[in-house]
Image (tube, rainbow over all chains, first blue to last red; front, side):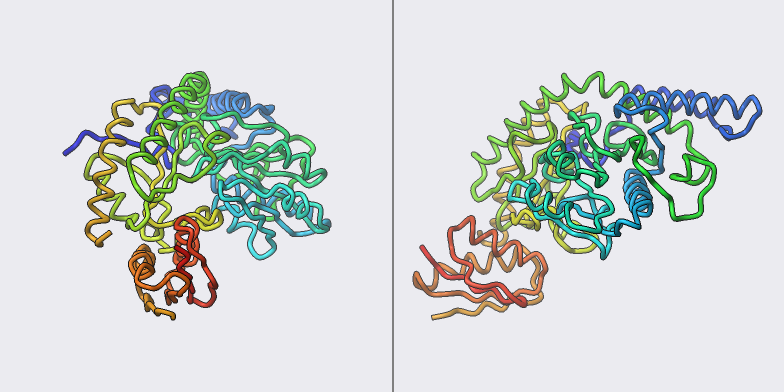
Length: 371
Length: 70
């Protein structure tokens, strides 16, 4: 058994030590119902308020603009649906890029206008501008940066293009790792992507953005996240974000240098490989490439046997057996696809060993099919 | 001249591998028609043609016509 090297931080990061410490103490202090008026309830309420203040500061909003949901997906669904419902007199259309998270695509449904991307994964800004200015647009959605290929989207220009149309920015891949541009109306994120626990999503709604949940509401989170909140995990998410943001600058520099090296060595050492995504205007910690004639599942499995945890957008690695809609929209090879994403615990030795081991694995899989 | 490759029922990368092996067997200017029903083939055959500087003449209804340019 090889030593493990976890290179799938964009799927989930191991719990940050600060979050772990917070979680262990919060399960004993923050278990009660924060809407109750007794001592235990008020304690939980105080802890939840503290967590909200920390999370809001991390996102750059006021605490009363920040809602906690049960996942990043729930935040996207809730945010899009509630803003859309508030603007039903204007229309029902959701304008979004072709490379958004599947939660955006599923929520937008039939009333969606999908805007294409170039080969780097960046949205066609002129087409986006034209689409949001059509009559009947309820809301637009554009991610801060793509979760599969790392390419950043032109959020500031998109904000300007949107005018009065609210813009939802999915910052799940970026928050804690990269600068998230301002100007949006709604922002969503997910704690397990920055070293917080699973089961905590963020939904930030700027004051002045109308929302109207069209589902059965309760008194929690202004109706945007029904049910008893997981106060200990929200506290852990806040501790992780605070710690992660204090480390972000140093990690950003380190990750960019290492990703640049992987990019260079993959392209130099492996024939017939296409490294995809913008090489400069991108997330610091993500790199994606596709190897011609290689089965993605075989590649992920072989890398796993060598100790490397990576992700893939190839059809054979997905439960639906369809290729990644991101890679398809970009028009790049979908088979033989690998995404690596560096965690805060990643070392240079791991990155170096990955670059050394990969060419032989690709060569072996190709040889099996006579290529 | 046109060579037909029936890749129906095969998953990517197999249709692309068969295309890559077959194209050098036809003359420059001739075509290979790939029949493939894997949804990934639509993206992958087009991307392979771009990377290999070969011409994707048409792509419709699980039928991809590729002309050898070099």
